[in-house]
Length: 228
Image (cartoon, one colour):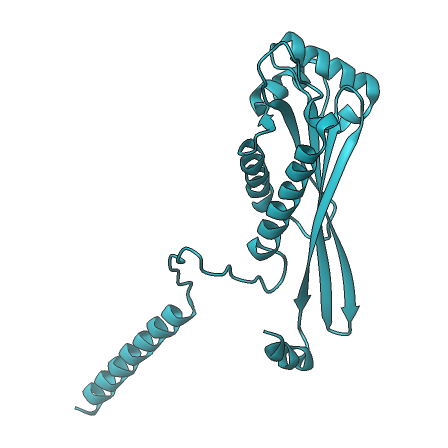
């Protein structure tokens, strides 16, 4: 009888332990929800995220498009008065990350965001990546190699023969600068866009930056509450 009671008590405690473990694992596990339209983005605790990259993409592309629209000599470079007006073809050479943080899956996200905003403008049309990659492969070049003048000329000539002329090449670069104060730090992120005319080598440069504060000390976390 005593053995039976001890066995039942042991089984009961095991049951309670299993219930507790399931409860704790459910509380500690990842939970997700669909965010509402217009809801503020989550602020990353360790590195930049959408709260940093999205604003600087929108701001920088808007500056670039506005600059081109205001500069007739740029906007009309590829314009023929005897032909109907057409958009200028731009090859987007991708994003160079020179910041202290890895971009991860944000690299493709940023590229698509920049492409989308540029194609919505009245000035530009984005050249297909597939066409560009095929030409670069045929002439044994990488996007970084296009800074050399003879490489640029070979690339433009090959694209023209392929039926896809390129009027401009767009380079983008992300950099960061960090200011540390004991355990706390501030990091400034900058996106720079360089639009290069393939005929004149003249370039238009626009950039935007955003600062983000990271608090690891108790003092920093305390005072951060009053900055929101």
